[in-house]
Picture 1: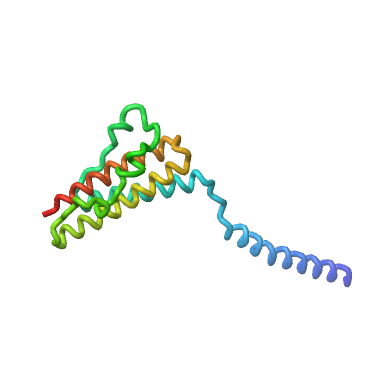
Picture 2: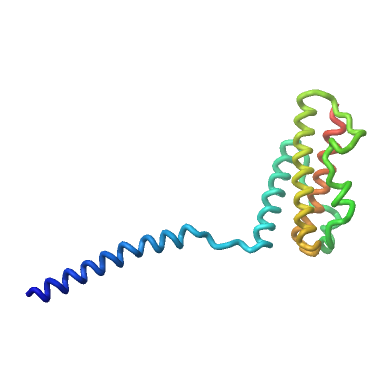
Length: 157
């Protein structure tokens, strides 16, 4: 009888130890998310920035559109123009003289944000070597969105 009680007690202790350790192990493994690969994390950042641009264009009452350069055959890569002058906020243009009204300030603030987001998208496209079609399309699209929003800001009366 003592042997049976000792075995039963030993089995219960072993089960308790195993059960006690199992949740800790699964909690530890669940806490560490799988690492995201570099291109996927950059693509997610591009998508986030692109969505922000679309929302800001909607706030300005401007349509979103596919750049003509990408509509036929895709984008070969961000152009030097997109990487420099095409993605500049209104404040970088000395000839931009919007009225000092609240509406114009709001319009120009949205434009600044759109251009900043477009510039970041193009930087990521450039970091990816300029041969990522998705990134290049979003860069070209962001550049056009920046240009449209600059025009709205700078012509605000």
